[in-house]
Image (cartoon, rainbow, N blue to C red; front, side, top):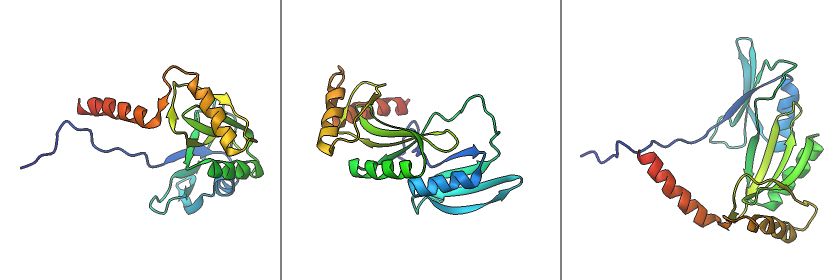
Length: 188
């Protein structure tokens, strides 16, 4: 007897992102040096040159860079490329690497539910490296945070900002509420 719920949504997991670049070698070097990606493959597909990059050996690529971006674009279609890290030590590690690799517009901020470093890669794509905090608060929220502070003071500043908002709660409570909403949505 088949007990599979025919109405249940199948699993869907994000895998990778591909985007066009103007200077393929420069961009591949930036992602290798700043974010410690490894080139897993590279080559041509017709007239398009591709570089595949990953930080996870179970993923052939998490990013694929493709040649062919026009030199002058009126608007960058990529809002941001975001990478999660486990904690402040890792966030500080990548902050230093991004600065050394020449990232532009480096800006530490808090969203209340996370602490983030935003910057621009060599072609102006916004990158976010972030860590989750143990709480949730209303979004959107983006406030500068003093990244020069010690870890405990930085977390206290982020929490104080988050606590000002009316929907502040522990992350676990928010996750349980969202899980229930998702269960209902995916059962439709």
